Amino acid sequence: MKLQYWGTAAAEGVPAIFCRCEVCQEARKRGGRNLRGRPNALIDGVLKIDFNPDTYQQSIRYGVDLTELRYLLVTHTHSDHFYPKDIFMRRKGFANYRGDNVLLTVYGSDKVVEQIRPAQESKSMEGLLDSVLLRPFDTVQIDKYTVTAYPGHHAPDSGPLIYGISDGERSLLYCHDSGPLKEEVWENWKANGTYFNYVSMDCTEGATPSMSYAHHMNLARDIELRDRMLAEGVADEKTVFCCNHFSHNGGNSLYDEFKEIAAKEGFIVSYDGMEVEI
Image (tube, rainbow, N blue to C red; front, side):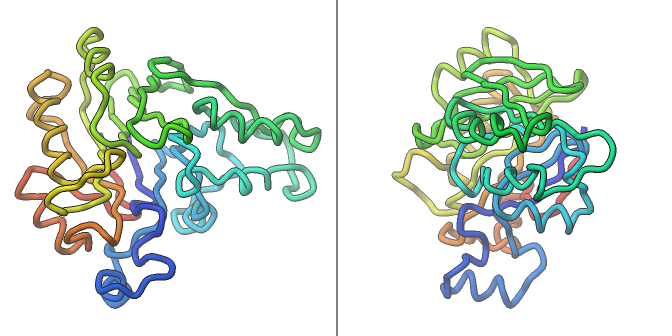
């Protein structure tokens, strides 16, 4: 299973869209892996995770024809993860189809389905868009992938879900956006003997020593999550842990600095375009 990160920043991007802080100025100067777009990813060129305002440009950058996209898994409705206006561009008249139309099925919480339903029910989108409601702890088969939704610890009105995804041989946890996980998630993992080969976790606040905001993570919280996963048997010494989803306001948030800090704690660090064989 191959995971490609298309965007690895928080909502503002890095450099942030209207910011002149030291981090943003340095990111503009250095370029490369220090430049981060809004967050989303793609598995095996088949299963898309999130669809934000940067998706169009990212699809061109990474050579992916979105007209062939059939499966979209949405974590929550914040616009840096879900921008349905661009999905509505699939409608006839805005997009000209040759041959068979490709049905795009969007999977997500009730908040996601609420946002997509008006377009889904439009005559101009007939045969082009569908949706599947996922509730916490639902499991669904998407192509060859078994996907389980877990409640994210994030803004409740955005319908936050995080996802366990398995192709039958390897499994990953895509844990964005979320603060420290709820006990019911741990109980579910224990009851089901869940195991992950790869864990992508929120690190919005970077190396900031401490944080009071409950709905995101920093490196210290990532370490706590990793250590508990190891202790609970949800992961082991072979599991790869990756820090992802960075804000320019986080401590040591530039890729060049943060990768060294994270490596000392046993983490790899995402960057836009990074491909990982799980």
